[in-house]
Image 1 (tube, rainbow, N blue to C red):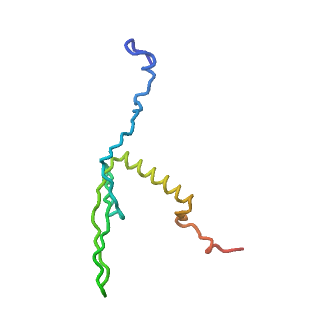
Image 2 (image 1 turned 90 degrees about the vertical axis):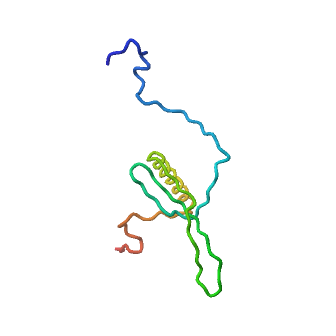
Image 3 (image 1 turned 135 degrees about the horizontal axis):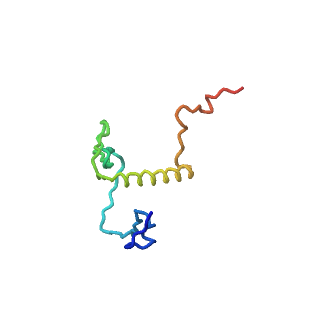
Length: 120
């Protein structure tokens, strides 16, 4: 590859993409939202949409079934890159919870459980 007279040697060898150094700046006024369920989750190829929900119980009445409502608490829309980052971080959390004994790992589909294995 021929070197350009206008471009220094280091710049000619530099990759086409550059890393951007981002620093986190907190916004204390940013609201925190509580949710106890996920009402919906969809990916349309361009964005991951997650609707978080909150359960509200109705007043308890004697001799009546308990009733309640599930309402949207927050709708979060992520770019594909942010969705991948969320998935990766959730996998890290799941791994840590599994190691701590809080979660159990499911056996792979079709794997024989120890109780179903025949002994010889």
